[in-house]
Image (cartoon, rainbow, N blue to C red):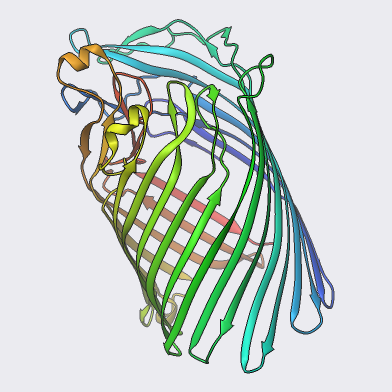
Amino acid sequence: MKKDYWREFGDYENYLFAPSISYRGDDYGINFAYTHTKSLSPIDRGCYIYPVSGEFLPVSAKIRLDEPYNRLKVDVDTIDVNFEKNIAESWLLRGGYGFSQSKHEYGHARVQTYNPNTAALNRRAEYFDGFIHRTHAGSLTLNGVFDTGIISHALLLGVDAKDYYRYRPGALQNPSGTINIYNPVYGNLSLPTTRQKTIQHQKLRTFGIYAQDNINLTDELILSLGLRYDYYDQVARNSYENAPTTDQQDGKMTYQLGLLYLIAPEWSIYTNYAQSFNPQMAISGDNIGSIEPEEGESVEFGTKFQNDSITATAAMFNITKKNIARTIQSTYVPVGEARSRGFEFDFNGRVSKGLSLSASYAYTDAKYIKDKGSYAVLVGKALEATPKHQGSVFANYDFTHLGAKGLRVGGGARYFGSWYTYYLGTNKTLANAGITSGHQYKLPYAVVYDMFASYDTKVLGHDTNFSFNIKNLTDKLYYQSSSIGTNAQVIPVQMGYARQFMFNVAVKF
């Protein structure tokens, strides 16, 4: 697959080879799958807010201010082997092994400073090559149902293990160069050739064992109890010569408790409490400090209705996470703590003959409640790039009952609420203009429309689908995320994709 990028330069290329084979006996099954993917895609930091004016740099959204070598090359290989075996009448044993390896490299002209008097952007050339991510993972589970007196149980026992390796040699960097935003000339900032001494070399091994029991206390009341223990062993270094900057081992027990009540066969209410413990690896910063696992707690209250035509859910939630990793003075450390609470609603179903509707809405109040270093100024403020309000509504009409078998058309809208981003630098020019670290900027809300047409038929005896999609029908300019952890004098903001037309043909053999 190949397609052009919507901005001034860049394109996408993706090649996939994915054979698989399965075998099923009387009481067991074995599956094997392999994939090889080669891809090329733009690395686009987006557009830029100049903190003094609080406005985007005054250029067209289609103009890029980096270089054509801002692109990511990736080769990925994966292997997945799994089996399942019935043991007696009520027990099922499942096991699996997965392997993945990705090798990638990318160039980057990183914007550093902006001079509004000369319209010049200063950029630093970087090139990262030799990236390797490699993972081995295995799991084994046993599912069974049994009774203790009048109480029935659905029991799940499991173990899993993972070995993860991440390596990146020192980045290539060259001195910086400038570009004029009104008359950009590309190619003057060449690919870098000077290799930095720092590396990223990380190994993480994890092992988990868990049990979960869904207990039918009555025909209407179900209690869910879960227990999991995780252990990890982690080593990381930023040079070949020095001792590891991280060499740690630890483990923790986490719990899960849930209760579900059936008001009617189609309608239930539930509540759930869960803890999380996730060892993490550095993804930025050349210096890798002590990387404690991210820990969290969540509480949820909800209800669900489901019959043959519709499914509807509504829930309130409160989630807290600590040890959110940050890059502070080029060191990747877990210092952040955040809380997210809100409400979400989802509806999917057939509302009349031929007509199906789906709708969703989410209200999210997410704030920083603890942080350190340059991020301490964010305490009490909303998480960046997290709208309080998001929603969507889509309709799909099937013309089969009108004699046009296989024809479907539909469309809808996606709503992205306004959100905040922050300047976290210490630039003296901006400080003299009254812009200090923690200054916030509000990004506007947006409504994006999509539509599609699809037709199922047979071609030479094979099931065939023709589909035509239009994404972002009105070509709306909207913003999805930002990068606030940089030391640049501008704030990169990533835009949503412009209007797209896609025609696909799928044939089953």
